[in-house]
Length: 294
Image 1 (tube, one colour):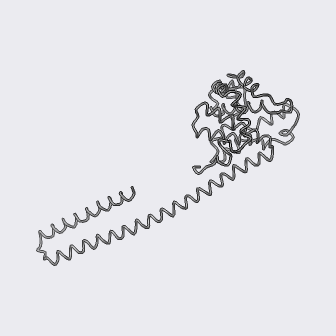
Image 2 (cartoon, helix red, strand yellow; image 1 turned 180 degrees about the vertical axis):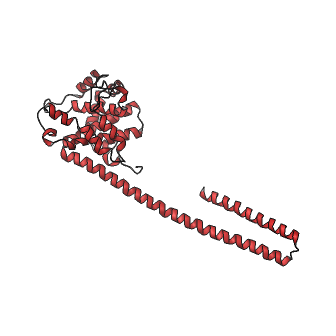
Image 3 (spheres, helix red, strand yellow; image 1 turned 90 degrees about the vertical axis):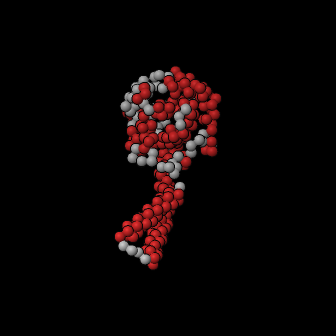
């Protein structure tokens, strides 16, 4: 396409140049007598100037093409380095969370599995699913700011300790929204503990004022919380978890999301719980969530 455009421009300029040279000759020849030798000299000069123009244009465009290739190569290398830096940042955040509390990291991978299934059932596009998965792996990053004696406590939390735990969405938001390449997940991280009836935290948002991705995430998070061991109770079955989520439709959870959980069914959700233990079965692996398009 570029070559065709260049050829068209050169043809237009050349045609204009020769037309101008001809009209100049006509204008002069009408006023004075011009010998055959002078006509040949004039024609030779016209052609010589045209050839010089072509040579200069060719050199200019070849040099410009080379510069563009070099610039493109440098931009690709810079994008690759930026991509590697982004991946490194994500891995560092995930590793920090895993080292601080491995149980939280395992919980996050299961929540991503459930959230992806609900999002797909609801027809969310690939970009939204990608964002949801990334938020899933990072949603509890704010727990880095919760003291160990509270985060790792084996017995039931005291009211003031529970208030400290409830600060983790805001802490996570403050960490993530500063990173341009993942800040589109910050709202999910901030709002995933909001309740559909307004009884959640940190802001007490209600209904559709809560982003759909955060509403999906709240359901996925609850499914895993119910089916996981807690200091004050053993893990419940997936069947029990689904029943519990359905019973809270319109209260804690978005009815639309709950319908998708019912449609997925206990068997499918139980299979997801097992599949996430095998990294090759994850739809979005943590190391693949930051891609060249960042």
